[in-house]
Length: 348
Image 1 (cartoon, rainbow, N blue to C red):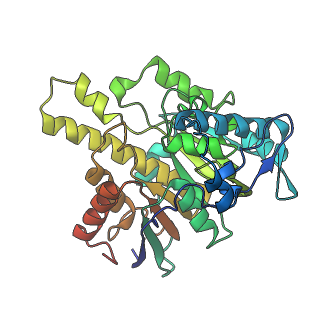
Image 2 (image 1 turned 180 degrees about the vertical axis):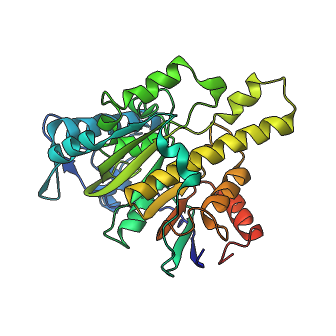
Image 3 (image 1 turned 180 degrees about the horizontal axis):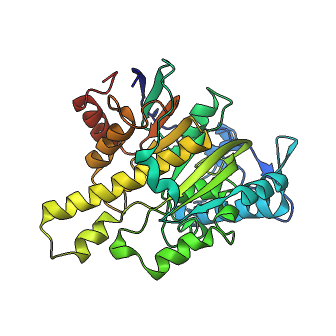
């Protein structure tokens, strides 16, 4: 593998609420995002001349649900307006849905080990370890390249978009709230993914089934701010639910169970990298796959990424030009950094 150029980004300390300038969008048949609070637009004198009326605190989950509702309204309308410009979503959604493919567990992605990697052209792959969200990672890549960007969706195995319609806050939900992804997860082909796992979750290991959704438009930020659209491809895959596996399987010794979990995760991660490779996508946003509610070991997941794409002679070492590991949570970020350092990934 050619040497990697690794840049570490630390997420800047967020500004206090009310200081960020928000762009308002309008869309047919739906409400616009709420404007900044009155205290943000009032003068200092106006704010201090009389006792302010206590403001009702909006539940964050309720706010996320409203953001999801507005996103779906924009998709249904086929367009939205921002800063005097109207952006069309209709054609993009149609193209994405038509191009979305379901890959069953027994697909030919299983042949990844027997395929030849791309030839090494001597270029350096840029690897970025960043304490940022997946969408921030995608925007970072988009600022660097006009080429296709692939994003890994840490998916619910049983419900399209996870709990984004009810205001849940994990990675998949943020992507679904902010983009045209959701309609592609509800096509006749895509629903096979959810039917499979609802029928049999394989002891919470789930399966190596995947959904590939091309040409997804992202038009909102994680906090709901409306944006000019930019395009990504999204690969939907469910990690092993390691926490549930451990709870269900009391027969096997701990070390055997952990080895089985790691083996299943390695195969799944290899297949998704192979799918990105086959699609010709050379710029990726990955992360700490399955280490949240699914409770996979962070250092194990980080080590598997090294095995598959960052180590000397790794199968996918020459497959990509830029890879952002978008990691939320300083502890998780530092675990990735520790593994990359211990494994002597170039730059650490």
